[in-house]
Amino acid sequence: MVIPDTTRFFAPRLLNAPLPTNTFFQNFVLKNGDQPEYIHTYSIRSAADELTVCHPARTHSASLVDQPFVEDLTISFPSDANNGGHHRIVAFDDLSVTIDVSPSLRAHLVRSCPYVTLTTTKCVVDVALV
Image (cartoon, rainbow, N blue to C red; front, side, top):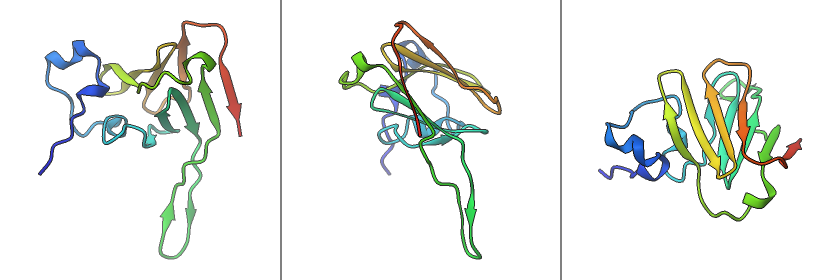
């Protein structure tokens, strides 16, 4: 059994205590950390220094129920586009997670919250609506 190294996705100060398991934000720290996570009411993906939000719609047939990730809203900073880094979790508790998506963009995600809250250290932000 190979245990994944998730420490690269957590801020250094969080590594002094045991890391959580089976959390609502676990897709942000498994493999490359770029898989969508359903935070209820939205699916959210953090990849390539941008945050993408999807308001999921289920499709179904007699044998399958699917909830595809469709990019409804993407937020990023032009100057951070080639940063080459990955997001970092800077705080978490049972109901929320705070992620530094890039050096200029921080996401405050709360389960069952109808809002996605972002803070920025710069004035210019790219927003793409699909």
